[in-house]
Amino acid sequence: MSDGKVLETRFNGLREAQPALPVEWYLDPGHHDREMREIWQRHWVYLCRADSLPAPGSFRSFTVAGRDIFAVRTEDGAIAAYFNACRHRGSTLCTEAQGNFARRLIVCPYHQWAYGLDGRLRATGPMRKLEGFDRADHGLVPVATAEWGGFVFANLAGRDAPPFMETHGAELDYIARWPLAELVTGHSYRKTLDCNWKIFWENYNECLHCPNIHPELCDLVPIYGRAIMARRDDPDWEASADDATPRVAGTLREGAETWSMDGAAQGILPGLTEEDRAAGQRYATILPSVFIAAHVDYVRAVRIAPLTAETMELSAEWLFHPATLAQPGFDLARITDFGTLVMEQDGAACELNQRGLRSATFGHGVLMQEEYEVFLFQEWIREALGQARLGEKAAPRASRRAARE
Image 1: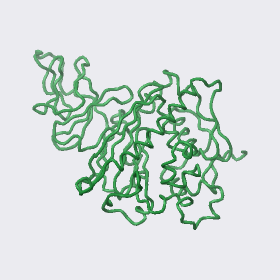
Image 2: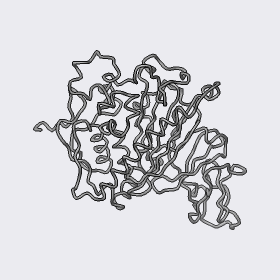
Image 3: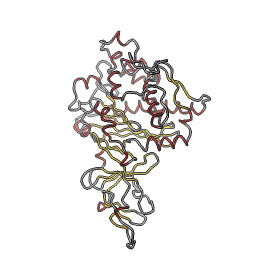
Image 4: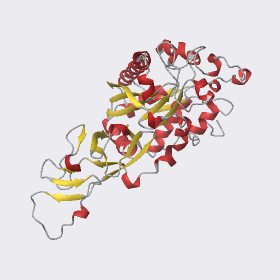
C-alpha cells in the first residue's frame, strides 16, 4: 500500500498479507540466546504470588533467561530480588527452590560469606581482614522488583529497568477492579511444551484455530466459533453494532457466567461492575511472560518461560477469594478442568506448529487479515531486537482494546 499503513482503521485486521518472522528465529540456538539477552533480560517478567513469600527471610529461587535469581521478603516487609551468586567467587547462594533463611542471613554454602536480606555483605566467614577490601563494595547484585495486585515481577536490568507501572499500568487498569491482592492460589498446573515460546504467544493472539482446536471453548464463547476474537474483527461489524447476541458481541453464551465446565460461576468476586460481569472474561497481557484472565469468580494467571529454542514451560495458577474456596459445595474441578482442557489443546497445537517449522523449506510464513494481533506481537519482537518494523508503530495494547470491544 502506498501510504505504508498496515492495520485497517474501520475494523480490526491487516490491510494486506504480511510476512511472519523468519523460521530460523524459532529454531536457531544462537538467535534464542539473543532473545534471552535483549528481551527476557530487559523486560518485566512474572515470578510468583507475593503471598508465597509470607514472612521476612522467606525466599524463592527462579531461573529467568538462563540466569539464576532469588526473591526474598526483607525485614521491612518488601520483596527484593538478587542474582543467585556470591560476590566472593560466584558460588550459588540459594540451593533450594524455596525456604526461609535462618537468622535472616543469606549465607554462602561454599565459603560462608553472609549477607543481610537487604543484600549488604555482613561477614566474610573465616577470612582475615585484608587491606583495601570494603564490605560495602561487595553486596549482592540486585534485580529490579515490582508488586501489583499480589503479583511479583522482576527485571534483570536492575537499576536500568523502566518503571513497571509506566510500562504496564494502562494494560493492568483493565482488570484493576478485580480484588487481585486478596486472592489465593487454589490450583496450579505446569507442563513442558516442545515449542518455541513465541509460538505460544502467537497462538494466544488469534482465534483462527479456535473452531478446529477448541470446540468446547467455542461453545462457551460463540464468537470464537467464527474464528475471530471480537466484534470489530468482522469487516461488516457496523451492520450489527447493536446486536447483543454472544456470537456477535463476544460475550459468553446465554446463561453462562464464567469459564467452567458448565459455564456456571461459584460466587461473584467483590467490587465488579455489571459491565465486568456481563463481559464474562477480561485479559491483561504483560509481555513476554504472563497473561491474566479475569472471570467473575476467579482469576487465572498463565506464565510462559522459555527453556531452549524449541522448548518452553507453561504454568498456570487459579486464584480465588478465600470465601469462595470456603463456601459449602465448592467444586474446584469444574473450573480447573476447563482451563486445563483449553491449555492442553493449545499446547498440542503449538507443538504441531513447531514440528512443522523443522521441516519448512520457506524462509517465513504469512499472516492473514485476522492475524493482526499476531502481527503486532511480531512487531514487538522486531522492535525489542532492534529490527526495523514492517508497519506503523502500534498503539499501546490497552488503547487498541477499546477499538476491539
